[in-house]
Amino acid sequence: MTDSYDYQWVGAPRQPDTSDPEIDLVRQEIYRLDQSGDRFAGVIRDTLDQLYDGQRTGRWNFDQLYKTEKTHMGTLVEINLQRCFEFADGDATDYRIAGVEVDCKYSMKFGEWTLPPEVVNRIALVVTANDLQSVWSAGLVRVRRDYLRVGRNRDQKSTLTAAARSNISWLWGNANILAPNLFLHIDAVVRDRIFSARAERGSKHGEAGVREFLRDVVGI
Image (tube, rainbow, N blue to C red; front, top):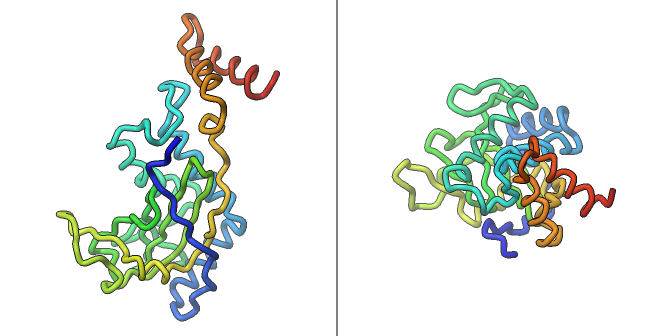
Protein backbone atom coordinates (compact mmCIF):
# COMPACT_ATOMS: atom_id res chain seq x y z
CA MET A 1 0.00 0.00 0.00
CA THR A 2 1.33 3.43 -0.89
CA ASP A 3 1.00 6.40 1.40
CA SER A 4 -0.23 9.48 -0.44
CA TYR A 5 0.27 11.77 2.55
CA ASP A 6 4.04 11.33 2.64
CA TYR A 7 5.70 11.85 6.01
CA GLN A 8 9.17 13.35 5.77
CA TRP A 9 11.54 12.49 8.58
CA VAL A 10 11.90 15.54 10.77
CA GLY A 11 15.14 14.58 12.49
CA ALA A 12 15.97 14.96 16.16
CA PRO A 13 14.10 17.64 18.12
CA ARG A 14 15.91 20.98 18.28
CA GLN A 15 17.14 22.27 21.58
CA PRO A 16 14.72 24.80 23.15
CA ASP A 17 14.89 28.19 21.47
CA THR A 18 15.50 30.37 24.51
CA SER A 19 15.98 33.39 22.24
CA ASP A 20 12.18 33.65 21.96
CA PRO A 21 10.71 33.98 25.46
CA GLU A 22 7.12 33.52 24.21
CA ILE A 23 7.96 30.20 22.58
CA ASP A 24 9.61 29.21 25.85
CA LEU A 25 6.47 30.13 27.82
CA VAL A 26 4.21 28.17 25.48
CA ARG A 27 6.50 25.15 25.52
CA GLN A 28 6.66 25.12 29.31
CA GLU A 29 2.87 25.30 29.61
CA ILE A 30 2.28 22.50 27.10
CA TYR A 31 4.86 20.31 28.86
CA ARG A 32 3.17 21.09 32.17
CA LEU A 33 -0.08 19.77 30.74
CA ASP A 34 1.43 16.83 28.86
CA GLN A 35 5.09 16.04 29.57
CA SER A 36 5.10 12.73 27.69
CA GLY A 37 2.98 13.76 24.71
CA ASP A 38 0.59 10.86 25.34
CA ARG A 39 -2.48 13.11 25.59
CA PHE A 40 -1.47 14.96 22.43
CA ALA A 41 -1.00 11.69 20.54
CA GLY A 42 -4.35 10.47 21.85
CA VAL A 43 -6.09 13.51 20.37
CA ILE A 44 -4.59 12.79 16.94
CA ARG A 45 -5.55 9.10 17.10
CA ASP A 46 -9.10 9.91 18.22
CA THR A 47 -9.51 12.58 15.54
CA LEU A 48 -8.46 10.22 12.77
CA ASP A 49 -10.86 7.58 14.04
CA GLN A 50 -13.59 10.20 14.34
CA LEU A 51 -13.17 11.03 10.66
CA TYR A 52 -13.02 7.39 9.53
CA ASP A 53 -16.15 6.53 11.55
CA GLY A 54 -15.41 2.95 10.54
CA GLN A 55 -18.23 1.29 12.44
CA ARG A 56 -20.77 3.27 10.44
CA THR A 57 -18.94 3.84 7.13
CA GLY A 58 -16.57 0.89 6.82
CA ARG A 59 -13.62 3.21 6.21
CA TRP A 60 -10.21 2.73 7.79
CA ASN A 61 -7.75 4.69 5.63
CA PHE A 62 -7.18 8.44 5.22
CA ASP A 63 -7.14 7.97 1.44
CA GLN A 64 -10.76 6.77 1.61
CA LEU A 65 -12.00 10.12 2.88
CA TYR A 66 -13.58 12.77 0.70
CA LYS A 67 -11.51 15.83 -0.10
CA THR A 68 -13.70 17.99 2.13
CA GLU A 69 -13.22 15.55 5.02
CA LYS A 70 -9.45 15.60 4.60
CA THR A 71 -9.55 19.39 4.76
CA HIS A 72 -11.72 19.18 7.87
CA MET A 73 -9.07 17.09 9.66
CA GLY A 74 -7.06 20.18 10.53
CA THR A 75 -10.08 21.93 12.01
CA LEU A 76 -10.97 18.88 14.08
CA VAL A 77 -7.43 18.59 15.44
CA GLU A 78 -7.54 22.27 16.48
CA ILE A 79 -10.93 21.81 18.17
CA ASN A 80 -10.06 18.55 19.89
CA LEU A 81 -6.73 19.84 21.21
CA GLN A 82 -8.52 22.83 22.70
CA ARG A 83 -11.12 20.58 24.31
CA CYS A 84 -8.45 18.28 25.72
CA PHE A 85 -6.15 20.96 27.12
CA GLU A 86 -8.74 23.68 27.69
CA PHE A 87 -6.67 26.32 25.94
CA ALA A 88 -8.25 29.77 26.07
CA ASP A 89 -9.44 31.38 22.84
CA GLY A 90 -7.00 33.72 21.18
CA ASP A 91 -7.96 37.13 19.81
CA ALA A 92 -6.33 36.81 16.38
CA THR A 93 -5.35 33.14 16.66
CA ASP A 94 -6.88 29.81 17.69
CA TYR A 95 -5.52 29.72 21.24
CA ARG A 96 -4.00 31.72 24.02
CA ILE A 97 -1.45 29.57 25.87
CA ALA A 98 0.36 30.98 28.91
CA GLY A 99 -0.97 34.36 27.81
CA VAL A 100 0.58 34.01 24.33
CA GLU A 101 -1.39 34.01 21.05
CA VAL A 102 -0.85 30.66 19.28
CA ASP A 103 -2.32 29.43 16.00
CA CYS A 104 -2.69 25.67 15.50
CA LYS A 105 -1.90 24.24 12.07
CA TYR A 106 -2.23 20.58 11.14
CA SER A 107 -1.14 18.81 7.96
CA MET A 108 -1.02 15.14 7.01
CA LYS A 109 1.99 16.05 4.88
CA PHE A 110 5.04 17.35 6.68
CA GLY A 111 5.76 21.00 5.92
CA GLU A 112 2.43 21.74 4.24
CA TRP A 113 0.90 23.80 7.06
CA THR A 114 -1.08 26.65 5.51
CA LEU A 115 -0.39 29.90 7.32
CA PRO A 116 -2.71 32.92 6.96
CA PRO A 117 -1.50 36.53 7.04
CA GLU A 118 -2.77 37.04 10.61
CA VAL A 119 -0.27 34.52 11.98
CA VAL A 120 2.77 36.41 10.66
CA ASN A 121 5.01 37.41 13.58
CA ARG A 122 2.97 35.17 15.86
CA ILE A 123 3.62 31.63 17.08
CA ALA A 124 2.26 28.60 15.24
CA LEU A 125 1.81 25.18 16.77
CA VAL A 126 2.51 22.92 13.78
CA VAL A 127 1.35 19.31 13.94
CA THR A 128 1.69 16.42 11.50
CA ALA A 129 1.04 12.68 11.52
CA ASN A 130 1.20 9.60 9.34
CA ASP A 131 -1.33 6.90 10.17
CA LEU A 132 0.33 4.26 7.99
CA GLN A 133 3.70 4.71 9.70
CA SER A 134 2.08 5.33 13.12
CA VAL A 135 4.12 8.48 13.79
CA TRP A 136 3.41 12.12 14.67
CA SER A 137 5.25 15.33 15.51
CA ALA A 138 4.43 18.77 16.94
CA GLY A 139 6.50 21.91 17.25
CA LEU A 140 6.47 25.67 17.68
CA VAL A 141 7.69 28.33 15.29
CA ARG A 142 7.58 32.11 15.15
CA VAL A 143 6.16 32.75 11.68
CA ARG A 144 8.33 35.47 10.20
CA ARG A 145 7.50 36.92 6.81
CA ASP A 146 10.82 35.85 5.33
CA TYR A 147 10.09 32.23 6.38
CA LEU A 148 7.18 32.05 3.93
CA ARG A 149 7.13 30.99 0.31
CA VAL A 150 6.69 33.86 -2.13
CA GLY A 151 3.77 32.26 -3.97
CA ARG A 152 0.48 32.41 -2.06
CA ASN A 153 -2.97 31.05 -2.77
CA ARG A 154 -6.04 33.20 -3.31
CA ASP A 155 -6.72 33.25 0.45
CA GLN A 156 -3.29 34.84 0.93
CA LYS A 157 -2.15 31.74 2.82
CA SER A 158 1.37 30.42 2.46
CA THR A 159 3.68 27.66 3.74
CA LEU A 160 7.12 27.63 5.32
CA THR A 161 10.11 27.36 3.05
CA ALA A 162 12.23 24.23 3.41
CA ALA A 163 14.97 26.31 5.04
CA ALA A 164 12.53 27.92 7.47
CA ARG A 165 11.45 24.53 8.81
CA SER A 166 14.83 24.29 10.55
CA ASN A 167 13.56 27.07 12.84
CA ILE A 168 10.78 24.87 14.24
CA SER A 169 11.41 24.11 17.90
CA TRP A 170 10.04 20.57 18.21
CA LEU A 171 8.01 19.68 21.27
CA TRP A 172 7.84 16.09 20.12
CA GLY A 173 9.79 15.37 16.98
CA ASN A 174 11.73 12.54 15.35
CA ALA A 175 8.52 10.64 14.64
CA ASN A 176 6.88 9.93 17.98
CA ILE A 177 4.79 6.79 18.06
CA LEU A 178 1.08 7.07 17.28
CA ALA A 179 -1.22 4.29 18.49
CA PRO A 180 -1.41 2.03 15.43
CA ASN A 181 -4.42 1.74 13.18
CA LEU A 182 -4.71 -2.06 13.17
CA PHE A 183 -6.83 -2.12 10.04
CA LEU A 184 -3.96 -0.62 8.03
CA HIS A 185 -1.64 -3.48 8.95
CA ILE A 186 -3.73 -6.66 9.08
CA ASP A 187 -4.11 -9.05 6.16
CA ALA A 188 -6.37 -7.58 3.47
CA VAL A 189 -8.52 -10.74 3.31
CA VAL A 190 -9.15 -10.59 7.05
CA ARG A 191 -9.91 -6.88 6.86
CA ASP A 192 -12.40 -7.38 4.03
CA ARG A 193 -14.12 -10.13 6.00
CA ILE A 194 -14.44 -7.87 9.05
CA PHE A 195 -15.96 -4.98 7.11
CA SER A 196 -18.19 -7.28 5.10
CA ALA A 197 -19.53 -8.73 8.34
CA ARG A 198 -20.49 -5.28 9.61
CA ALA A 199 -23.13 -5.17 6.87
CA GLU A 200 -24.56 -8.54 7.89
CA ARG A 201 -28.35 -8.40 7.93
CA GLY A 202 -29.71 -8.05 11.43
CA SER A 203 -26.38 -7.01 12.93
CA LYS A 204 -26.64 -4.05 15.28
CA HIS A 205 -23.98 -1.35 15.36
CA GLY A 206 -21.36 -3.48 13.64
CA GLU A 207 -21.56 -6.36 16.16
CA ALA A 208 -20.84 -8.92 13.44
CA GLY A 209 -17.74 -7.00 12.41
CA VAL A 210 -16.56 -6.90 16.00
CA ARG A 211 -17.00 -10.67 16.25
CA GLU A 212 -14.92 -11.14 13.09
CA PHE A 213 -12.25 -8.81 14.44
CA LEU A 214 -12.00 -10.66 17.74
CA ARG A 215 -11.85 -14.02 16.02
CA ASP A 216 -9.40 -13.19 13.24
CA VAL A 217 -7.16 -10.53 14.78
CA VAL A 218 -7.32 -10.90 18.54
CA GLY A 219 -7.79 -14.65 18.39
CA ILE A 220 -10.71 -15.11 20.79
